[in-house]
Amino acid sequence: MSSLKPVYVTQPYLPPLDDFIPYLKEIWDNKVLTNGGPFHQQLERALCTYLKIDHVSLFSNGTLGLITALQALRVTGEVITTPYSFVATAHSLIWHGNKPVFVDIEPITLNMDPTKIEAAITSKTTAIMPVHCYGNPCDVEAIKRIADNYNLRVIYDACHAFGVEDRGTSILKQGDLAVVSFHATKVFNTFEGGAIICPDAETKQRIDHLKNFGFVDELTVIAPGINGKMSEINAAFGLLQLKHMDFVFRRRSEIDFAYRKGLDNIEGIHCLPQIASDVKNFSYFPILIKSDYSLSRDQLYDKLKEFGINARRYFYPLISQFPMYRGLPSADSKNLPIATQASREVLCLPIYPALSEFDQQRIIDVIGKGCA
Image (cartoon, rainbow, N blue to C red):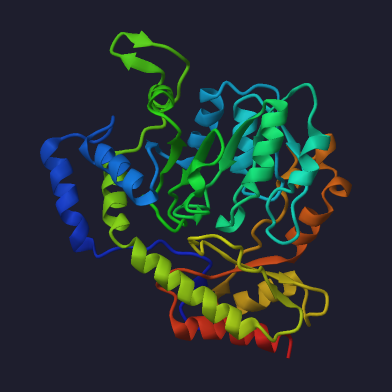
């Protein structure tokens, strides 16, 4: 067992504590802790500028953002989605009273396969919820064509896709709505948090009402909204962290490059290809452990752990394999061969700005030695 400090898949980037103190003092002095306070409003404006978007509504987490997006668009019935994601994607549908319908993924991007969508559409289908997996853009044009043909809404689970741009524009502008996560493990975080990217001011206003119990004013409630508001402390941390994002993205890109170079000639280790996009965020570094590697995926997972390296089987099991979903006809693994194979092979390696060259080389060396 290694005595070295453990290494995790991801760790939050934490700016110097002294830089955060003035924000806390201002919150203390103005005595506004939540309910759309000054820092909340500042962060919304700052994110619009940084992400090159027009309207954003902050949330206390991404899951509440997904649920509220469904409510804002009045989505009913069945929603086509991917089994290869974090459980919050499908959970949001259940919470809103929708039925998830799973379709398989593409073998290259591990995103929803657009060619599988039409066969899953029924008279009860009202929306599609794809995921920009690992921050790699979905085939948004193909999905839009299908949605337009069948008059379906598109809500992107863009929780991995902060800062990603494709064809000259933010990927967060795609679909009717897009939801991002600012959880502590994400490239940009507010400890806990999230946001809905809105296409216009009217939609943002409706979403802002819904995340505050449906209140319009002190005496008027227009819908059964939820408490999804972001606190001033979370917003303040987001403003501070936003100042460091150029460094964060640069460092993550360096780690991504070093992994690809170090793992390139190891038989049975397959790095997902770089997906063409204008701006990447390098939010994860997944590898696929193929049958010609000396260990199984789970054996390598255990071997890394022996050296204090905590990789993650992300995403395993598939959402469709959990008890609350596996009874659905669309959850049958025979319908999801690519997703099933990927979930059995995937291993996400540590990637975060504070990962040292020494620790990254340790990870590469352990993988290179295999069971030797």
